[in-house]
Length: 218
Image: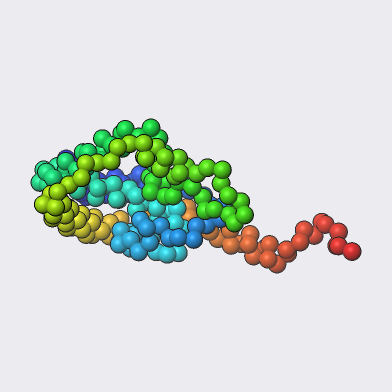
């Protein structure tokens, strides 16, 4: 790789720290399903971002770190796994042929998240972004089928790519341990005060559920 993993992780943490002062707590209804990228992530554990840290804060860092791992695996695949690389190239060409690609080009804070909000009972959507994307995908021809031998060889190469991804991921987690102090300092400075303010506001609203300026109902 052109840059060492240490440099890439440090730059990713720097970028996340530069974004963090702009973070604000979400005011919309939360999702029921946990984020598959962040839930139980060893990356977040290594960074010291536990379950008490809001998901939006976690997601911005985990996505940046995932990009580093993906980039390393892509380089390894291009050099060592020709069948898997050919399959990925075909899939990439198929994706470029789609007329609507709403999940591409998103900021790290939004990458990998569901495209649509959770549905509300009794209020169906007229359309969904994911539905429009599926329609565009259906118009693109499927990839050609593989023989049984090709499938077996491809599975073997996928296994090798997974093993390499796990190795890089473990190294990245080790590097993140050295950034925990500044990550925690930023959480203390930018995130915890906003959470405390929300809890204080909630406490006030529970103590005084009615506006004292409003006349009592009679």
